[in-house]
Image (cartoon, rainbow, N blue to C red; front, top):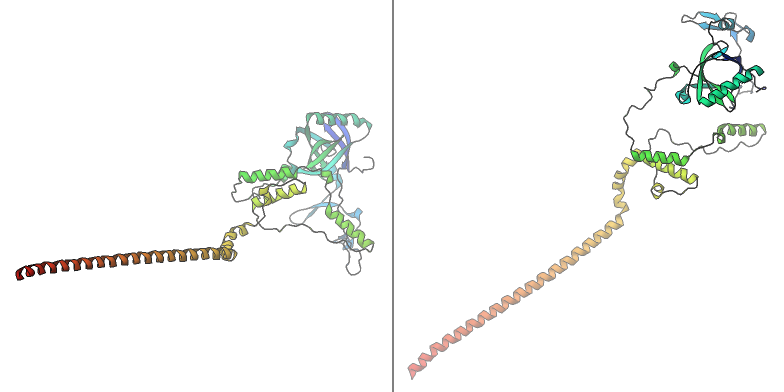
Length: 365
């Protein structure tokens, strides 16, 4: 801690206990900063501060702060003015309450600081507060003044150090009324089950293993340009098309499958067949299938038609044969009946002639 410059010196007020501390930044930015340059010759572009009334450049020592009213009038405010304000938190982090950690909405959290005990006499009360926070499993809510304004803070234990998170005031958090979806949407249990499966498959991650890929790529680019080397090839970004509504179930299924494959796990058969398609494409698929069906099943249709035609021809032939046979039988029966009737007629005629001949013979005798 000795090599870290403190940004504020004061004390923690814990009831009647006062703990001298130094406030140091708990975080640091590793982002790469760029300078503005003149494209023609690469010269630096700098901003100079001019006084509007005197139209001349002024130094940092000549610059102060002021409050601008609605009519444009500037009211000068000095650091001495602010230091003399009658507020107890001017040089004190005043603890006002202890609450469970889950009572603090992460939306309120702002800049983080470490509180360092200032001097040997502060070690004992500092350690007492730290251990009390550990045992109670609570966080301390405090008020303090920094950079010209009173702020809200939360004290908690990180390793063996008391850390303080600056908190936004409750009225600085915007309401969510205008952000939530207007439409009424129902989520099915199957969709929730798939979401749970995806969460379980992705598992947990050690935050220490995460790093800034973009910053590393920029560093490689700068190093290559500085050494006169070839610029590194652009890596695929893997960006997904924005603005498209996807089939939620298919997207979840594919996500679960991809997560399992990345972990070397086997995937279910149902999940293997899932594809991500847009809802619009999903709705129009049946129509397209209906239009393309004749081409896709032309062979089947021709085969089926041929079978039906053959069956019809066979049936027609059988019917014609049956009709012909029936007709021949009917004709034969009619012919036989006619012959029989003719024979009977001739027999009757012969009998009649015989009867007539007999009386005549008797008469002659």
